[in-house]
Image (cartoon, rainbow, N blue to C red; front, side):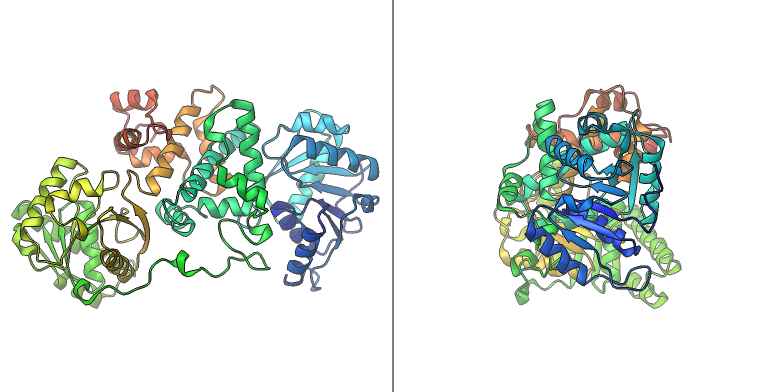
Amino acid sequence: MQDTVEPGRAVAIVGLGTVGEALLSMVAATGRPVVGVDHDPDVIARVERRLKGKDLDATGEPVSCTLTTEITELAHVGVVVEAVTDDLTTKRDVLRRLRQVCPPDTAFVTTASALPLLPLATASGCPDRIAGLRLLRPPAVGRRAEVVRTSLTSDEAADVAERLATAIGLENVVLGQGASDFAARLVHPYLNRAAAMAAEGFASPRDIDAAMRLGCGLPSGPLELIDELGVDEVHSYLQSQWDRTGDEVFRPVPLLTSMLRRGTLGRKTGQGFHAYDERGLPGEQTPAERGRVDSPAPGRRIRHVGVYGSGTMARGIAEVCATSGLRVTLVARSTDKARSAATAVEASLVKAVRRGRITPTGKEEAAAALTAVDNVSALADCDLVIEAVAEDLAIKRGVFAELGAVRRPGAILATTTSSLSVAACTAPAGCPGETLGLHFFNPAPVMKLVELVRTPDTADDVMDAGREFCAGLGKVSVACPDRAGFIVNRLLFPYLTDAVRLLDDGAVDVGALDTAVERGFGYPMGPFTLLDAIGLDVSLAILERLHSEFPEAGCEPPAVLRELVGEGYLGRKSGRGLRRA
């Protein structure tokens, strides 16, 4: 087989959806001749408009290529990248047509991600000429790919695929077919659950995506990722897995099916869970997407914040409030705990100065703004009091009984619970309209996300005050109702549970799957590393609460997790967990 990636021979991209269009642009940017093919004239017109806004190619010329609806125009190309919908019949038929049209030395590269490559290659009639290019995340947001070969792929065809990937700037990675497949099987149900969350109106698409980006450090939110991958591609993967396994986690949620029928396929069509302009960039948010922007009533202005608690979270919240120019009173259970909390905040402020997060003057002002005491009556004139004690309903209810007795009329009371009912925690205070959840993420001075939780009784102006308070701290608040897990844990822990259940398959390797998720989807940690970081005991407790409220949500703790915790395998903090420390 000749060197089919030479600049003199054209590269063809067949199928100009999300993946195909991105690959077309990447090839065109190298200055090589490239032909884009799609059966839909509207797709051709859209891609042509977008290409006009691209930068210059490697030769300094405007990016350009030939666009057509006819496969028959590929009679002289050297390599064809097939990027049509991830459906076996569709891909097989396209590859068979290409085999008939293209020269006998043309190499074929398929972007199949959910389909087994060997059956597809053999069905095409030219298995030796076909290699796979498994794109790890959409090219628009991540430039990694794995070249996949079958037992029948020729060395020449695999070499063409590898050199093409390198030429267009894709980082070649080697994960192994099994690890990549398991990573896809793990991530797609998470995307499906996020779509279900949006469909039920639990939270807005903007807030769902912001919560998972900022709360888990992900490169993109789940709905953004669906838009990037293409609603049709995600739906096709889920449908194929559901047909094959019958597992309900893969049944595409009705919203994805209706979006597919409407043709709102995400970034490539300009509308999915979010809106995109002609260049495929995110469009302006609507007022509804931005949420309420009203300022709280004058009586809701927050200038003095109380923090009840002296642990890590309480100290972090007190610190971030003090560095934001607010007066802060921290109440601990004893004089020693109050003194210890103040010392810890002082030490943290010193580190913040050393790291350049605040100035020495800012540090002194923050220290002066913080008072730590052991008397709950010191919270009597606070505008907002935030409870940050142990995640135990009885303890929290006891705290709110105290707060209800000392708070001034109009003061807002908040709990930092991550998995308990906000209404149940705050009920003993006796002021349901003036309570809410403020779920900060640890460490509070660093993490940007706050889940702003509304009970059925929380007043509108209390929610507005909460939003303004979070914004004043430099935080991003996401609104959700008072249901166990809120946004982040309700999506994160079923995903982690699915990962543990995959261990029932003897082919799953913990390290390989972590690596596949990290490199394939750009996540900062694989699921098993993340479980060890959270703590297996903490994860087990959260799963038990989630399963109690959502028995059909896939949160029933796996037996292996209970067994590990019972044997003292708690994760990073104990030096042993799902992975060796």
